[in-house]
Structures are given as structure tokens and as C-alpha cells.
Length: 370
Image 1 (tube, rainbow, N blue to C red):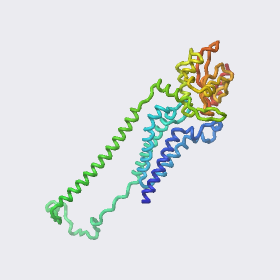
Image 2: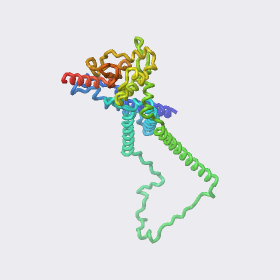
Image 3: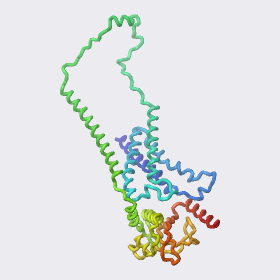
Image 4: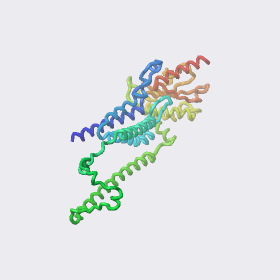
């Protein structure tokens, strides 16, 4: 009983370690955010230089927890369970929360798609490691039955025969069967037992194959939105808020990503070009919002962002979505009468300190040069 409880606890800890490993590989920025001060320390070991290695610490903990009796069963049960959960969640995330699956910005690291690839490599490496361990540490051979053993002193060399003598007069064994007629009822019960084992094994593999088929069908058959459906999804999601300080409404994490995707779509497809401000607000569905929230989002006063210096740019802030730290801002450039929108540009800030610093430095250098 105690052994079973200990095995169950080890399996539970292994599941926690496997989940932590997948999370660390997928979202390293949320665990150890990059910082310009650490990256500027040339020749020194910082958290940023150690981060690719620290993300594998849950994997080491998983191997330690799984070691011992039933090591392979515990290890691969934990790894396979977390992998199955991730694959089940994949189509849901791709349809509703793609920012958790793929990178929103080029400077981001990880995300679930990348983390799953590294996680699969870890599973393959663990399988090879277990194979090497089993190959180089085989189980001890079973002891030979003593009834078949004979001491060398009991052998009589003078009674030995040559090969020719053995061939001329071979010894034929005369078996004596000490059993009576066979018990057919016992034989039938044994056959039924073997049949039950075969049926149980066939049922087990049938269930495994059905589960794999269901998982594959779910992964590939779950409906994904096309480009226009994804746009409408993001337009409906981008104005979700949570309460903030000073009676302000802050965007949720999902709303902030959706807002950036909508703004990027408007920039790449020139959807706002040739529209008035009122028409652009209608396309962005701002007219459906309460007056207070709409007024906050449509603030056109100059803003200082950590990624660029916009105070001297000839563009107007049109829409600002923020969670208090990160920003997704849609800027517009208008005609001479300030009536028709010519260009719409999206700007992010606060997502990555190093990327913000590099872009602001490069932008200021270009402005001074030209």
C-alpha cells in the first residue's frame, strides 16, 4: 500500500514538472523578462545569458523525480499526458487565442508552438537516455536451477565414451509418464484464461487506437477561422477591459493582442485610407462603446512611448489600447485639411524593454542624421 502511494506521489510530481517544463519552454519571457541593463553587461554572466539553460531545470527535476522503480512508466506517462493536453488545446488556442500559440512580435521568444517542438525533442532524448541506461545496466541473469548442476568430482572419466562409440550405440531415453489421463476441464479453463488475456490486450490496444484517432480528428477537424472571421473575432475582443485606477479601464491581455492584430491588419491592408475619422471609428466599431470608454480610447493628445519618440512626428494618435504597461497605438496621417486619413500605422511599446530601447535609439539616430 505504501509503495502504491509513493508511486502515485511521484507520478503527481512528475506531471507538475512536465507541465512546468512545457510552460518554461513556451513562455520564457514571462518567467525571466529581458532587460537592457543585463544585456549591456558585456563579458559577464547574467540571467539573460543563463535563461536558455534555466528553462530546462524542470526537465532535470522531472528526471530526478522519475528515477527509481518504474522510472520509465512514470516519466513517459507524465510527458505523454502533458503532450496530449497541449495537443487538445492547440486547435482551441489557434481559433480563439492565437497569441498563446504563435509569436505576436518578431522579438518574442517561445510561444506554445515553439515550446512543443522543444518538448518533443526532450521526449525523444529521454527515450534514448532510458534505452542507453537499460542497455548498459541489464538485469542480472536468473539463477540456474541446482538440479541441473553437477560437480566435476562426480564425473567418471574412465566411463567416458568416444564419439564413434556414441554414434554406434546411442543412448535412448525411456521416458516414464507419472501422470494419468489429462484433466480436460483444467485444460479448458487454462484456454479460457489465455483467451481472456488476449481479449483484454486487444481491448486495451483498441482503446489506445481509438483515443489516438479521436485526438488526430480533433486536432485537424476543429474549425479554424479564416482571415475575415479572425478579424471579426478580434474586433469583438479588443475592447474587453478590467477595472483600473482613477476610474480608467485597462485592456485585458487577450484584448491587447487582439487590438494589435486589428491595427496591423488596418496598416497592411490600408483599410482606413480614404476614410474620415467617423468612418474609421465605425470600421473599428468604436461607435458601439460607452461614451466614457470611447473618449478614453480616442484620446488624440501626444503620448510618449518607450519604443519611439513621437512628439516630433507628423502623425496623430487615433486609437490607444493599453493594460497600463504595454501599448498598442494606431497612428494616422491625414491630408492637408486634416479630414481624410491617408495612412494608418500601428506602434507597440512596453512589450520588451530591449526591443523598445533599440527602436528608440535607432529612430532618434535616423532623425538626427536626416
